[in-house]
Length: 175
Length: 175
DNA sequence: ATTCCTGCAAACAGTTTGCACTACG
DNA sequence: CGTAGTGCAAACTGTTTGCAGGAAT
Image 1 (cartoon, rainbow over the protein chains, first blue to last red):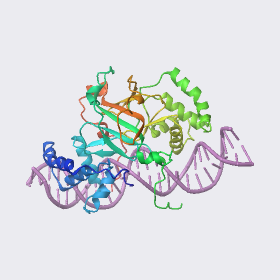
Image 2 (image 1 turned 30 degrees about the horizontal axis):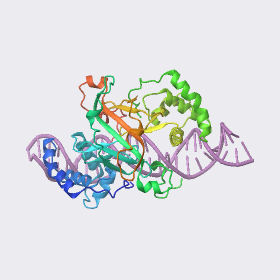
Image 3 (image 1 turned 45 degrees about the vertical axis):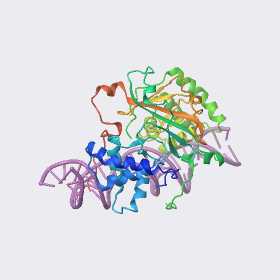
Image 4 (image 1 turned 30 degrees about the vertical axis):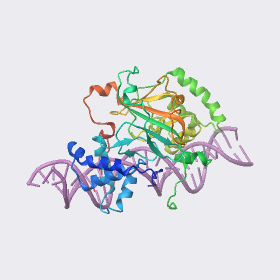
């Protein structure tokens, strides 16, 4: 799979360290066993602020952990998301993406290259909205994306959107 | 593919008629040929307020139009989205979903069953936000989802989320 | 008549599963 | 030592593509 764009966005080591320190505890509290694989996947996700996909995480880990299987990465991310230890971000663009940042925040999404960065808009906490009279619906959280073009993509004339970029691919077998 | 939940939400015939009437004109204006298939796909999407997937639309059309191919539905939706005649809604839940309603609005998403309904929160126009100081990012639109549980799913104890529901499936081939 | 569009089937990409085995607790 | 977790490979779902024939302008 192609790497997720915006890979340059690494998180501050201090923040990563803080998250990883408490991870083992939070894991146990959630009734999850602390395995080498789980730790590795979580750390990789915490360090990578580009909101990588499961496959993308697998690719970056596979070098260091040759035994690691793709299915395990999917299962781990699934288990972590279920216990709210990571967050899954819906994005039509190339499968589900993940975020180790579980505190309230929004996302800036570039429609051209697909880059996605965290942003905090003060006052946009979940509590701000449920007041609006909605049917019998119980709102639990807000999912806000600010879609536009990142500084890099504003320059390049490109009107093509992310989905349409021809991606490098192995030559297609003739039929 | 399984049908998208919340299929009960049909749009008002008046609204559908209005959209369909102008569709042919808007198509030509966008440089798209007006084909039987394009009309059919658009009408089906306009009538279905449940934000169906491409596959789901194909399934509902295939009965009436036996010749229609799945690839065509995908291509049509893609072409329409590019010209902004329909809107693609990113959602981790079961692939891309589409909406014939292209006016500014938000979505209520049930995390249990995946149902998705349009909702208009006054004052949440795109213009409300870009003022917030963001780097070199040019915000073009806001993508807001209110995630929670619909009235139907609040009743049923279910804590399982939509992704985890076992879906009916043909028996798996033994290996 | 020209160009876009469609149907078909195969290829692709992303994700999930059954089963046997490993290792956490 | 019991059970959650893992590796492997195959299967499955959703989507895209090349090509040849067909329809819209």
